[in-house]
Amino acid sequence: MRIRTLVLVTAATAILTGCTGKSESGGGDGATPRAGGTLTFATDTDPGCLDPHQSPAAAALLTGRGVVDSLVAQDPRTGDVVPWLAESWKTDERATTYTFTLRGDATFSDGAPVDGAAVKANLDRIVAPATKSLLAAGFLAGYAGTTVTADRTVEVRFSQPNAGFLQAATTAFLGIQSPGSFAAGPAATCRKIVGSGPFTVSDYVPQQRVTLARRTGYRWAPRTAAHQGDAFLEKVVLTIAPDNGVRSGSLRSRQVDAAGNVTPRDAVALGEAGFDVHRREQAGIAYSLFINGAKAPWTDAALRQAVAHAVDRAQVVKTLYQDQYARATSVLTPTTPGYRASETTTSAAEAKRLLDAAGWRAGSDGIRAKDGQRLTLRWTYVSPAREQRDLLAQLVQQQLRAVGVEVLLDPAPAGDVIRRQTTGDWQMGDISFLRADADVLRTVLQSSAGGRPPIVNDPTLAAALAEGAGTLDPEVRKTSYAQAQQRIAEQALAIPVYNPTYLLATGDQVRAATFDAQGLPQFYDTWLDH
Figure 1 (cartoon, one colour):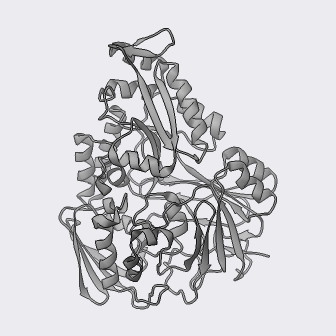
Figure 2: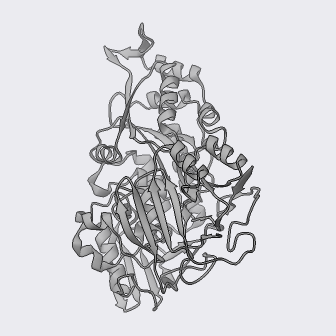
Figure 3: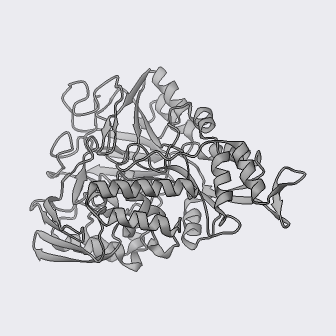
């Protein structure tokens, strides 16, 4: 059985793991990379919208990263920020002004130059109300504008400190797209994005496939890449296959070259069958449950704490994930800079004690009630679900019923779930999010981008996160984010369950399968040996 575990070292933590099989970089086992061929990749989720300026979905990052370059890159091994479209930068002491000097040779696939005007157009567009950005605009909190001081120099200004901006600028959410593509409107860029990356979008059929085609003349990959020049693959065809069995079965029957986000059970079976399995624990927000604290009776922290005690994380990871995923010990994953363990113990007895003390009594059916109101949570989650989260919902439903809390499962399409979050019309939800910086707590949980109410509205938490975002001092940031994680645990503002881990299974012909700093597969260095 071949399980490959990538090594990630960040400023906060070093994960030391074993590695078997072929090398994870460059030419695989030492063979010379070959150009050409089409990689067929079965993925679990349709992006819905390809534009990372608009979409908060990881699926948009998977497809968009090869199309859209960023001002800077993040080394997936060290967490360091390194040059990309910008060859250098400087930041003022208050983290309110960032000055970037762009390289002079980068162009978009439509032939337009990547210059200061393009950078300004992108950042202005992200915060524009018409874009309806659901996440990227949150990365630009306090954005006061961009000034083009020379053809290749831009000054990005914020009205308040934004220490997380530089790392955010490494993600595709703030990736630089061709301004010429914006004229067609947001709906058009949802279907096709135009960037300066090594691939272009040649085809997108929703719920079926996304096809990326190699671009010729690409010469500005960041130094974190294993090679320079054009991508090796001629095409990448991402087929949308939400069913776990279909993805794994397609790989076994050689209908696809790679299967993404395979289940832990399938990963073991595929490894035993001779396929390579690449494992990467992702940075960012752990898969967590959220209860809307603005909705009575869940404004009572004791009720949320009872739910947190009732959720048996160890049972979840053992039963559903065969311990291939680690039990979450904080709302942040251990691979995220700023992580600090702040775990709530599992105790059904403590959950019952808290509910009893709050005056909720069990009825004849076991569900608690108070003043004629049943203790109910309606859990709205995305369907089709990835990582067996539908089964997880059923298991958590059973765990909560055992202490007298009724959970009504409400699976819905991703668009409906996002709409309900945007309007605040939800009781219970679930989130995980990729970003290798603790500032992800502010940009995801506290963001009001797109006009939505914050997922977590807690002044004490907001103050801690604002302090972390307001300084470049690493010790102050570390302390602020530790306080934020402790506050989340104490008030049960989030209930972390497991650390998302990307399991990628590939055939022997796939070489140099690698992951970016967010923990998603990237295709630039990958090549086919056949």
